[in-house]
Length: 359
Image 1 (tube, rainbow, N blue to C red):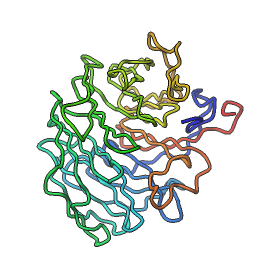
Image 2: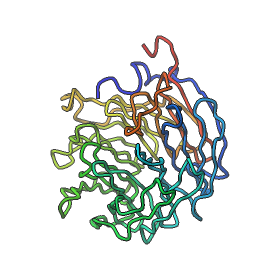
Image 3: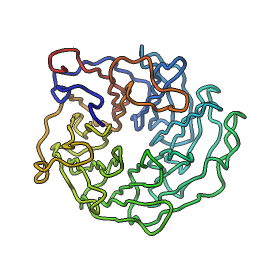
């Protein structure tokens, strides 16, 4: 998409201003997302190694809710919002299950025994709404959420079995994403460096390939339009993939340090590394086409933010993003906010400084 989260200059270290530093968990922060609360106020949900789900106001950093969810670490979060029902956050856990948490009720509403090993990623596929889960058991599963009880009843009756089970990975699935248009195309990555693209309406996979041999895939994302995807790996490289050409690498950026996470809006990518550095990459795209000069060796990167602990997760709060599109997105936010979850149990939020660097 044109423009993106941040104005020009955001790839410069001096452009960033820290807003909050929070220590809400008793262990590493592994997952974070931002969703709209009452009157469109942004709320930060975070999951940690302490099996706790925390809800924090992004305005003032105050804790709003806290709940113990499951028995082991929470690896990933997804937001479900419906104008006819109460909003939920679905939390993937290392205890092989997915939990549904209600902000309105302040408690867990149900448990889905999803896999035979840790759940590493959860995503929501639109139209019709379905749940995707990826696990260390090397499978990706699609669940029909319409099978459960109505969320408005104060409970969650999870489906008894998946509608689709994808089994073409040979190693633990570590990353997962779904296209935002129809929700039928899925991209997943595993601990062995392989990436697989699926069409959930058919089998086998559309294509699969070794993208980072000797490294693990830590994040995968579809870009708007569905032609391109972004992949981050522990070899320190961000890759822009052309999904219409068998996943060929159209461009790459070398961050120099092992990566753990990334997020993208289709115009830029922000990535977090094991050494605590944050890197921003302006994607070499014109519309839906790759800039010709971008193809070649990976360009080097310099960090825009530096911490002393590994960055496990990244999310972005923006008026451009609508995580709860059925009832309205985050309206009371003037600028994009970067959220980092760290191995040292802290959360940090940053704003883009209003200076010539950001104009």
